Length: 116
Length: 110
Image (tube, rainbow over all chains, first blue to last red; front, top):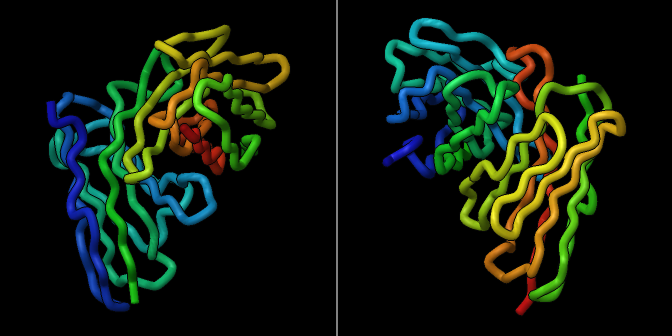
């Protein structure tokens, strides 16, 4: 099983450039998430989706956009990159909400993004 | 908003030692997750707890809902256990997502 596939692994952007971080899962999970991890800090939720066509903001959504046209894909778009967006980004998925039953989160391998 | 504190921040131990990592939180939760982040950066979910205790191999996780505290134990530690261990808690609203601790950096020396 591929699980959660996230691309690219590394990227350097110039200020003002745009890019899309790709995330695909093959586990038929309804819930998908984007997190960012800054040095010395806990992961923070950027956006999440509870199913195809449904997305919502997390704790730190400014400067990002998402879409969920299929169950499998949940891309994260940076429109005008800023140095404050330098971070490691993780996509994750789960079958149902993370507060139910024995639901575990499955993570992608991460994208290290630098905005210079 | 929940505050999640982990202790210790850093821990170096010798192979074979019994390891305990602690997590406390400030507001009642619906579930608590323990995650492992490998030196290469990948994150793996170890446990999800809403009460009691879970065991998987040499890993044991416990939670005390009344005291708002959870512990992750590693028995017979091995250098391959070296990683960052992260505690995360679920609130009552999905929009709040998980609140993550900053992690405990564990090094097991041979």
